[in-house]
Image (cartoon, rainbow, N blue to C red; front, side, top):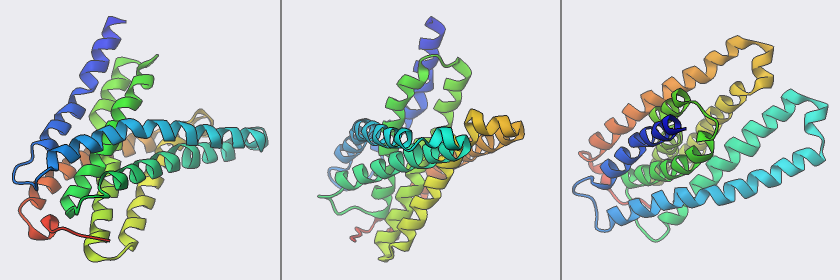
Length: 235
C-alpha cells in the first residue's frame, strides 16, 4: 500500500512540473498566471459534468441493450461516445468558459487548453490509482495524455481563431476524439480477446503522446518568439 501511494505521488510530478513551467512563462500578458490557475481548476471541475454525461449515456446504452446485442458495438459506443466524446467536449467547453472574458493569443489558447487537460488528468489519476500497479501509474504520469490532447485541441482552435477558419478547430477536435476513442477501444477486453496484437495500438498511441509532450515544449518555446502566436485573436 505504501509503495502504491509513493508511486501515485511520483506519477504526479510531471503534471505539477508542467503546470509550474507554463504558469511561469515570461513576458506574457497581464493576468496570464491567474488564467493558468483558472484553466487548471476548470480541468478539476470538468470531472463533474463528465461523470454526469457519461452516466446518462451509460444508462441509455443499458436501456437499449447494446451490450447484449453486440459486445463490440457496445464497446465502440462506450469508448468513442461515452468516454472520448464526452470528455473531450467537456474539456473544450471548460476552456472556452475560462477565456470568455479575455482576448487570448494563439499561444495562450493552446496553453490554457493543455492546462484544462492537465487538471482533468490529475483528478482522473485518483480513481485509476485504486487497484493499479506502480508501472501503470508511472506510464500514465509520463504520457500526460489529457494534457497532450489539450495541446492538439488548443493548437488547432487557436489557429482557427487566428486565421478566422473554423475548419481547423473541427479538424483538431476530431483528431483528438479519434485518438482518445481508439486508445480506449483497443485497450478493452472484448477487442483484445479478438486479437492480442491489437495491444500494439494503445502502446503506439501512448508513445505518440510522449512525442506530443516534446512537441508541446518546442511549440511553447518557439511561439514566444513569433508575433503570430502572440497576437490577440478573436472568433
